[in-house]
Length: 118
Image (tube, rainbow, N blue to C red; front, side, top):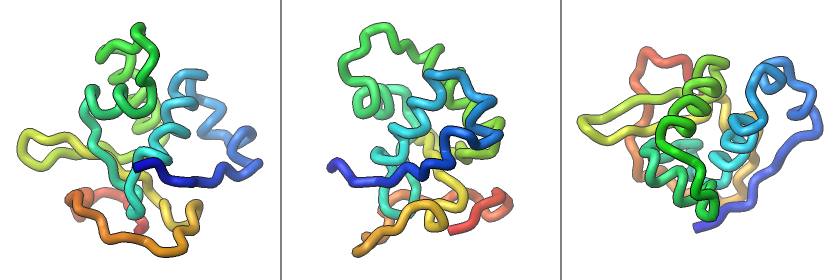
């Protein structure tokens, strides 16, 4: 289900955002609408590519993995797994997204040792 999310004007000049490639920036913005109300998302290549890049045949698992790694290296997402399923979460999600009627997440949260502010 599509979600309405906000992009603050300061996003474009953010120091961490400026370190990302253009494609990684686009992916990061796409992950906002892909994420649930707790800022969590399935981090499989198929799920992300199907949602964020449904009409881009040149988005390979290798490219997507590199973009996700860029975003994670900047601390803008946390990638984790629960068994064989890969997940991601956006730290400080609630600081940047105001959800009027948040629904509880059905996805497991990041590990307790992850730097994460729900």
